[in-house]
Image (cartoon, rainbow, N blue to C red; front, side, top):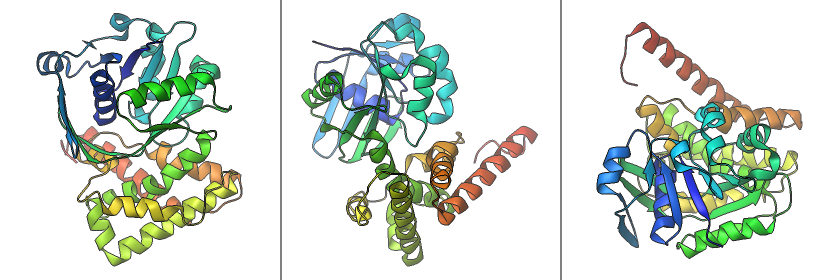
Length: 317
């Protein structure tokens, strides 16, 4: 059965995977309020090692009411915008609509389950390095798998149907029987690299790896996250960091998404990436002092920037 797919979020993740699905002949409909006219005129360009294509005719809309009911909704907005989903999602729903969040961090599936029912919710993790170059162009720096799973239950046939839709578009996608474990696996990378890229002065992943002290701190943070995951009941091998570091070394001068948000003056996903893992680790009796330090510093930076904007002293971070 061909799925009718809606995409909420027109940043790098939503634009890339939506464009790949269109290129693979899936029926995709984008919510693109800010970039609507540009995308309707020019389409979406994707470039990267091994792929360079344009999707000329994009089904782009100004509202989810215009899109109407879908079989699958890909949610690619930042976790800081989750409250907006309460109003955006209902027009996209029919009785069997699946909600697949491609967001970072912890707590997103629970938010969707609370508002739309746990039976609708799946989660996806995108292990990929992307940058949105312009309103109509996305560049991929490194390949990565997509891993999808059901929220708090074993994989259902629908999860394999969604994975097959991705695979037909040339996206390497697999189904996991433990979505929460895979969320923690991705945090092993996200917690150190997203945090240190900002706190070390706006540097890329290559600069972090080259610096002896920052590399050491990165490995310590990775070990800390692996330990917390195991304490929470999600078994990750103690050397889970190894593959992630090897992949990072092939990315070149890549700027993590949180750093790009910071430089663009956008809100940071502090609670989803650092706060919620900390709270869950503490509840399980695990101490994460380095992650706690990142969380405190990033929270303080956000507060200071918010105060400066309120007083009109700055227009750019």
